[in-house]
Image (cartoon, rainbow, N blue to C red; front, top):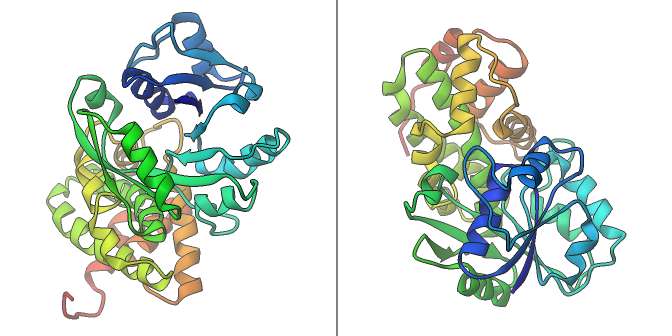
Length: 318
């Protein structure tokens, strides 16, 4: 299978390495201005892994025209712009696989909706979601992930082609739930980092339990299956997001409350804004997401915010 990967960050580069590792013909696209791409072209490696000479590194989107599968791994907020660029290629009969998590802030659209609205009807769309860190995969530590799509044949085909001893894929059964759950787990990751920064890590158990409950409510309100929040896309990704030293969102949350400069904003920073707007749209309560939003965007004191969460009206757990 010929596959093009768009996005030369850590995850996109890992996806490229993985698909080549299991025997596919893979190319990796990155913008000419990208510092990540410059390093890859010069050294064929980043700070986490090395790419074989068999992998084509390119600045030209034209290369993807001959690929059967197009894997996208970029910042979620840049997906609309990318799709506008791809429209000029008149792509048909391709499979788009989104290896990214997020919700578009300006519209509240899920990422598959963005692709669907900006591509030919003959193209199929799938998501590749779930737990795992590049560092661990590259060192041979296996994990379980999910592939989901509205088209069952596409889903089955991708799982057959992408499965290996390193990644066991499950068949997703709820595209709405899997997309929302995957995006929202980054917000819970930021909240977990904030607890670490306050030396309140013992509260992570409560955060995981209550966080999953509120995400399940949102998924149900949006027409998905609330049980998806308890699957690999959300709860199943908590170890890698809430506890891991490699978690970008967790580290961002910890650095934020400590007043340390972390550098690039985590994806959960953008996602929480979209979730708060969805909360209003669907008339549900997302108290943890709201708390993270208030701290990040309104500069509300984190300890006061935590106290407010604890003083909410008492009620049954379920």
